[in-house]
Image 1 (cartoon, rainbow, N blue to C red):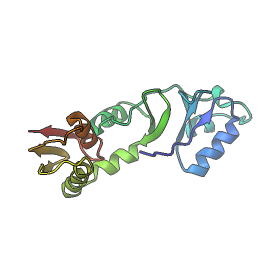
Image 2: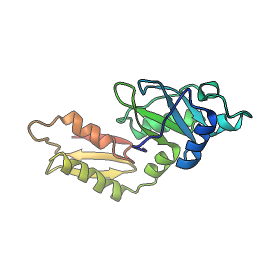
Image 3: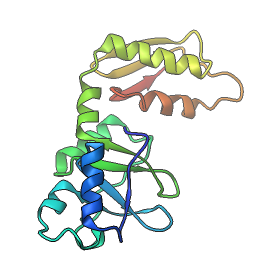
Image 4: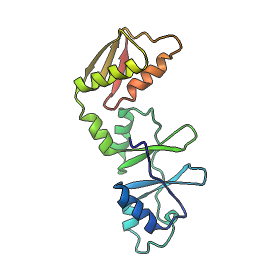
Length: 175
């Protein structure tokens, strides 16, 4: 996920949106309102389809196919990308403010991670959460946690959410 998303406002001219797409090497931009909430998406295809780039983004943007939250798992992203033609999705917080953008290539990179690397990444997540003595095994992206005991003041759910959010993790089983 890109954690520094580039966004554009609906009233901006299409030419400016085209420059942003080109400068940042992205295929689409979330379109936001005055409160920074997503109201649409402007893609390269939307720009290419217009002969006059002086009009506002609002006249050319597409609707939002899906919004995802930072805790969305790889399986959720795979399902959305498999069912749609979109190349990227806005990632929003609880207030629907854009906090990132996740692309199909992000998902492919996550799927390409080998189990050993993923095992180490999950161990690092657990260490940051001050979880010790937990055995981590990964097979085909599925994480098995044995002996998961979280320290006082730490939520077991929060730790599991952090593990699930690790790129490449497709499922988590804790025993």
